Each structure stands twice: as structure tokens, then as C-alpha cells.
Image (cartoon, rainbow over all chains, first blue to last red; front, side, top):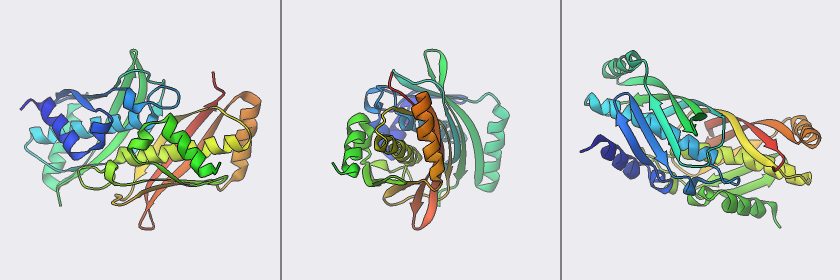
Length: 149
Length: 149
């Protein structure tokens, strides 16, 4: 199955809120995952995207990046977020679009190697929400992956 | 009107996602606001609360704390989150319950005074999600309030 559709089905099945906020997978590649959500179900009092929705889309983009890379190595695991730092820069008054790009692939190889050896590994990712060609939100998130109990 | 019901109506009207994730206002006092949400609409793949939902409930608790305190001083304003740091400590497998308690009331007075004078002020708050008498998530968030444009 197309990896994009496969990932979207997993998100919609496993995390019901992703259907409610309208999450779609736009890209799913080894070094780049992009998730989107429409503005309508995620509006706040100022008719821009609610900060909690921006955060949720961004966190799920990082989660999806790790899930897909584990899958490419024939691995599974429980992926949880452990720590995050979030900067809101400009409001988003249209589609929410979050992108996770891995520039240093050695970090990814180190992570996979550690997970294979220990059954537990940490991964730090930066996820950006862009709006009108500017950074709108930046999430720096640390995830932990461990083998299913 | 009861301040708790008033706040809940504002949240449900202005930020539609609060209805979808089942936000309720449990307490609304000058120095303490507690919001809750049921686990069911917020489940993740491990049958615990999705990290983005925990974050959303916590962010809205801080938002509500500021909104209510502005109201007590006869003020209104646009409240937005600017920066946050989040630590996930233990998973939540029951009701989500987020609490914002202001221990240093002088910070609150300083914030109100600054907002009255400048029409813009910053407020840092800590919001905790507790589960089984332990800290489950801690959010340190910086909000900015400015007069409606």
C-alpha cells in the first residue's frame, strides 16, 4: 500500500482525535513527513488556528516520522513524546501544514542502531509549521521509543 | 452567572475543539482554575491520553486563568500563547485534569498593572496535569495579552 495512505490509516485508527481535527498525510518519505489539517475544526477565538491544534499536528508529524522510519527497518515500537519546547511566531489563518525534515541522517542511523541493540532509544526532532512562507510555529520535541510491552 | 459556567460557555463558543475534546470547567477562582476532559475522545494508540490533548487542556487552563483574572478587573483582551515547555512524566489512563494555581499573587498584580498601563503584558504560568496523585505532565507557558485590535 502507498506509505502515505498507510500512515494516514494508522493515525486515524489509533488516535481518533486525528479524524476530528482532519489530519491528512501529504508526504511520507524517509527524510521528510508532512501532515496537514484544515483550519475549520481548529479555529480559536481570533479566527486563527488554536495553539493546541498546531501543537497536536506538529507532535503527530514527529511521531509519524519515527513510525515510518521504524517501519522501513522492519521494526515496531511504542513511540511517546517526553519533552517539548514550542515557539509560536505568527498566527495561522489557513491550512495547518507541519513538516519534519531530517537533515542529519547519521542521527537517524544512530537512533535505529540504538533501538535495535537496547529496545529503547531517544530521538530529537524539529517540526515546523509554515504559513505564507514564514515560520509560524517551531516545535523541538524529544521522543522515546521502546519495544511493545 | 456562575463564573465556572460562564467560562465554560466562552470556551465552547470561541474554541470549537473544546467541545470535541469534552472540556469542562471544574473550578474557576481568582488563584486557581481547573479544567477536565474525559479520556474517550482523547485516546492514543496505547489507550492512554494523547499528548496533544493533554497539552491542549493544559494550555486552555492557563488561557482560562488569565481570561478570568482580566474579567475580575473589568478588562478584556486577546490572550495568545507565545512559548511553552512541556514535560510528560507518566501516562494518563483516566480523566484528564489540569490545574493552574497562582502562588505568587504579586505576579498577577504586576501583570494587571502592566496591562492597564501598556495595553500589552506577558504572563508566565505553570499548569500541571495530575494522575493518581502524581505529576503526569507539567507545562510552563508564557502568554501575551494585548488589547483587541
